[in-house]
Image (spheres, helix red, strand yellow):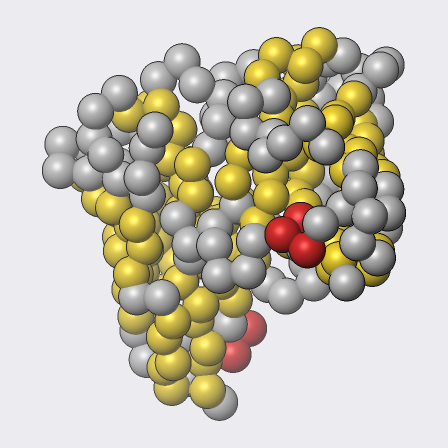
Length: 112
Length: 114
C-alpha cells in the first residue's frame, strides 16, 4: 500500500503571491504521479501526469516537478489569482496497478 | 465532448435505507473506477471495472456495498442499509486505458446519512 502525504493541509495567500505545495510518496514500485485541481461542486481536473525522474511540466502559471528517487513532487503556482482557489490533490500509481492512491490534498485560498 | 457525469449530485438517506449512485463514463472508456472520499480524507479506491468485468473490489468497505457495470458503460454503486459512516463523496472516474495513466473524474455524489 502506498502512503501519499501532502503539505501544507491548507494555505492562504494574497493575490499575486507565488506559492508551492509538496507531495511525498513511496519511491518503490513507482509508476506515475498525478496532480488534480478540485474546485467546490466541480469535477477534479487533471493538471499533470508525470512518470520520469526529473520530469518538469508546465501549464500556464502552474508547474510541477518530480523526483522519483526520493519520492516527492512539488506543485508551483506563480502569481496566484482568486480563480486558483481550490483543493490540489496528488495521487500515485504503482507499476502494474490501476489504482490511484491519493493524498488528503492542499486547500488553497487566494485572497483578492 | 461530454465528461463523466454522476447522479444524483446530492443524496440524503435515513440510516437503514438503500441508495443507488449512478455514473456515466466518457463514451468508449474501457476502465471505470469508484472512489470514496470521507470528510478530511483523500479519495480512497473502492472498485475497478474493465468493460463489464469487475476486476477488483478490494476497496469496498463491507458487503453492504455492491457495484455493477452490466453493459460496460454506465455503472451503479449500491449501498444497502446505509450507516452514518457511509456519509462521504463518492467519485467515479473513467479511463481510455487499462493502466491508470489518466483518469477523468465526475463531480461526485455527496451522500449524507442521517
